[in-house]
Image (cartoon, rainbow, N blue to C red; front, side, top):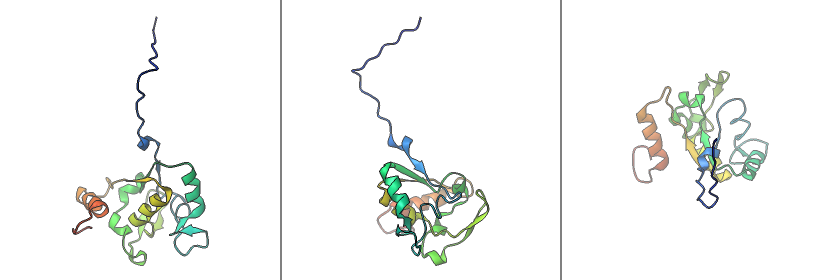
Length: 151
């Protein structure tokens, strides 16, 4: 017969907040029309982020937000989502309906969204069509505070 012993005075293991994180991917209206409506939208927003969505997500206290998603990340090239929006390269979202992505939601917009939500960003690397060098440059771009080719 099995015997179970409960040791109520033992320390409880810490559950890492990353387990409870959320993710944002360019499928359907999750990004465009969901989180992001752009700076010229008539919908109430701050820096293009929908105020109602941000407020709803703030209330549930998202600890971590992962982007650019799962399958979409395999075709996402971060350099296409930085710089002036009018000059950003368009792409076909082959994973989710073949829509044309204008990359108006990129690295800076994602970081802004995380700031508004009060959560930590989690960046997904492009392991489908990207390279190790591309990911290294993206990490440098986002984290290096000195003078470098990417920063």
